[in-house]
Image (cartoon, rainbow, N blue to C red; front, side, top):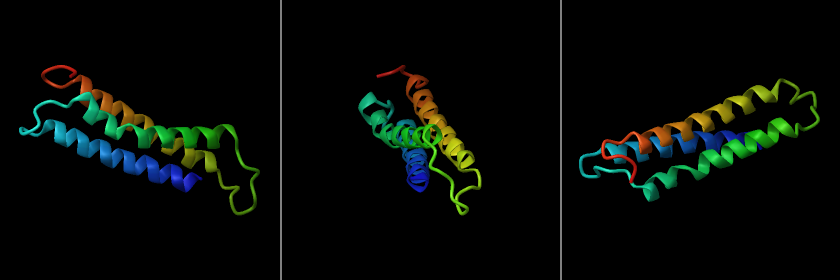
Length: 98
């Protein structure tokens, strides 16, 4: 489940970056809310999975007893900063939010 969290967090960050680049292009002068919402589901799923992992830890086995909360917290942070990045791209555009 932690691997799925990382996959969603990284893919969400990549999609958010691509959406922000599309909003900054001269052919697409404004980032509409419908376009910005495309980048939201993956970080939300990653944050949910990381939060679930942090709140409901699995009983550690000798192979997984090496601090899984660190990687879950990092994935949660990446998902949070991705959502913050998308909000900044949407609300800080020159024409204002659309």
